[in-house]
Amino acid sequence: MRFPWRARTSLFARLSLIFGLLVTLPLAVSGLLLSLIGRFSVLNSGATMSAVGERAVYRTRDSLVEQVKRNLQDVDDELAASAQKALEAASRTHIETSSKAVGDSTDQLILAGKKAFKKAGTQSADVARSSNSR
Image (cartoon, rainbow, N blue to C red; front, side):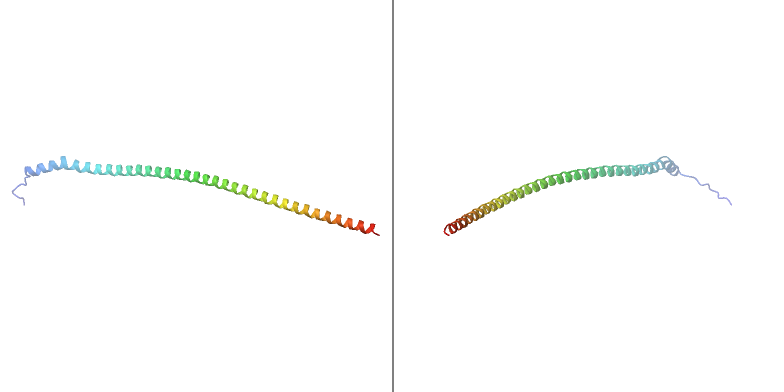
């Protein structure tokens, strides 16, 4: 059984099909391509920004390490100078104390020697008087 009428496509349907094929399909393809290119562009710019950030962090780290090294060297120099001054002061004090002790000991020895000679002289004189009186 055949239908007596034949299906006709309207002009609007034909124009819509042509519009779809000529405009919509390339527009969809270009949208897809642009989204892929945009994705790659975002990934590339993200990688570039990551590399820039990494370099900045390393540069900051290196400058911080150098500053800490300089500060440690300064502290080391100051500590060495302070220790040297303390050692010199202790040496001066020791020398002064030793000189005073030697001086005091020498004075005591001289005083004791004078007393011993005086006593010996007195005893000699006493012995000489007692031997002359006999």
